[in-house]
Length: 324
Image: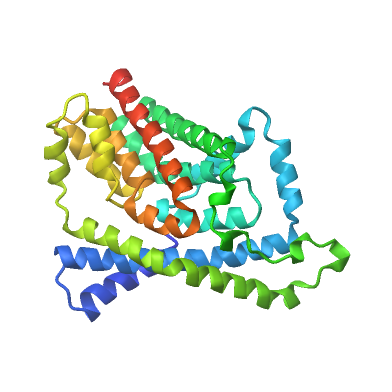
């Protein structure tokens, strides 16, 4: 069951009944897309920030760090983050509220990025579609490579020690969760502070969410699907990096873009090239960059995109070589 179905129904009602836009037009697709995704992501930002505040109140940051430290042998902490990313059914922009919440809760930067990288790439819907369209072998390889990209990308960012490039408002959290237990006040007395922090985070990030989703909506509604097929078929060996470059302005989740990939492959685009296009669409979107720009500073943002881009290109060539 889709938890966000009421939002989709409301977006469709506003688009087609209140605004009286004709179905199957570019404008109506863009408007419905914007209303649904912007509302969903804004709600996630607010409520996940509230949840993070409650967790910080009940669970000392030191305990979280100790747990991750005890599971850091052979990169197990990164693996756990990627597994959690794989089982959360979020697109790239919807994963950002959780990313913010994890940072506020004191989760190490590299481990948090391992989640952010993997979450949009792999989910149960995408896995089910992959099995039906491409078979179990390709699906297992796809899941394995998605997890590896998340683990390696997160580890690289973690080892670069780039915490100074995270926006200051992320670190400016309340101090109640860090006090000894006997000095802490009740959740009831701390609730106004937690709610105020959630509101501040919401107001800081909301304009960038609206801009990012707006860009995604315009591209979703007005860029013809066959444009990418015609371009990718012109490039031979270079089709993989070209596919990644073309995918960046787009915005979709894995389940939404898999049928497009099936169409590309059916028309002669190699599987690895199509997969690189899909992974770039869900993991490197321009709307994601616009939203993240308010959360992390440019050097970290460029590092994140560079690491993920390199990983996706390598995966594309791997699939073209192994699967064909």
